[in-house]
Image 1 (cartoon, rainbow over the protein chains, first blue to last red):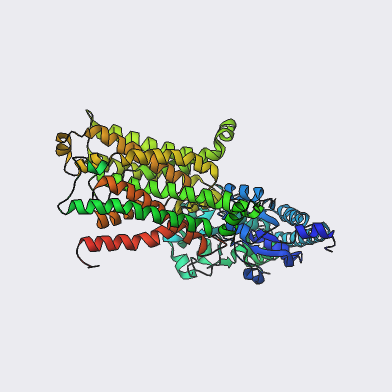
Image 2: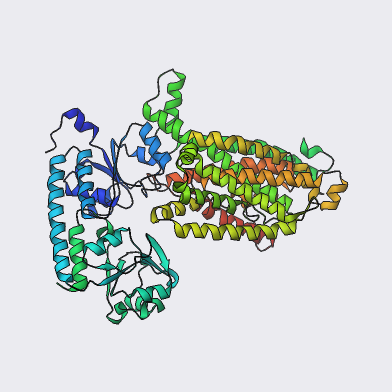
Length: 270
Length: 358
């Protein structure tokens, strides 16, 4: 129902999306015709990859951004650098920041903010309600599957040089693990940090969660469980590792309900 | 005029080379002019410098887009590129003269590492500053911290390496290595404390970029770098004397200790400021003076001026590449200078050893 006044419409019909979840939301709202460019993290849906790429959202080049001629920029929290954003403000390009939080409420907040920026509040409210419903269903199902014993999940960001970089609290990985009825095996710190082998062994994860990368930092399962740190864990005994696309798993966008279901199924079976 | 002074090292085939070196000023100035114009004329947006100039000449107003792209984005970037390129190349040339070691570079005496530590501290710890203080320094936080970092490393270096008014270059070199390691370790600690957003900022910062060029940075960086470069250029005679050894320089009437002080402070100021505004950009400082010495000989008066000109031109050239190759996105310029500089450096090394004849 994009039936705003012609003048208004025109001022918001060249949209630049910064951040994978923002791009997904714009597609989910059916407003992709207004998209003229995206950032490097916007890789879903596949059609989005055909749009010009203005680079990584935290190191934007002001002229690069202006060159695609946006009239509205919708950015995930943390787009920058600040100098680039200042230049865009002085060029009078409308700039909307979408808050980021790793919870169900966070997702509907994102959808409503994007909808407001695009003047499609009705569609956004409908989508947000639908996503909220799907998410709460997925979470209820996940909790049921989990039952009494919640499995301990270790999210590994990378295993470069045999050193395990794992997720503590306050991250997207922590958020999705909890939504899927699991327990984050690491709660001693916030953010992503390298762990000692002993700490990994002590965390005793039942399952390893990783991003599925096309480039391949992700070691094959055998190599993964041959790491001294992981060899003694319950996860190694059952060879339990789940790999998911990073944007799907950690994006906190419209597909998160499905990601919750996938992860919870991987943890407890269907 | 510096090169005419009695102490100038006019090597055997020298007077001829010295003339060429001074003629080189002209060619390199022209090169800098051309690269500046190219840098101002080309960018992702396709805004045309020529259209804008035409409008200015005929008194028409510029479009808002032209004004922002040319005036607020490209022009400060050109100035900042000139400053940073000149600062890095001159610092490299001064260090190489001072240490009489062709491999010396601000990196070696820990100045770059100290500046880096300052900048990283600001990125990671800036949020913890007492409220008023952060608001007070605002956008200057990172440059100021980097500058303080380079300054502090020079002061520590001095304490360690100076005895009874005499600075031992060998001790300073070793102390520099230790300082760089220490700065690296503390930076590592801060990286460990950083959250993942800050980590990504740090990664990009380390690769270097002129993308953050705004007028404020030009106003902050240009005077400091200009002053440091002028000081450095005036050291040419002294550095020539030093090339013959400290005792010889002393007998030639060069105030050796004072000259070393000035050289080190100039390098600290120039490098600290360059690192502060652009992050880590490598190879300019080591490759540019080498190339010039091959072309026109080791006489420092001409070498320092030529280094400033060529360093500025090369950095502007690299910057044009960095913003055109994957437009509308942009490559960090440190990647470009390394890709261009490392093979040239290797070629210079091979040539010095007589392994290639080019």
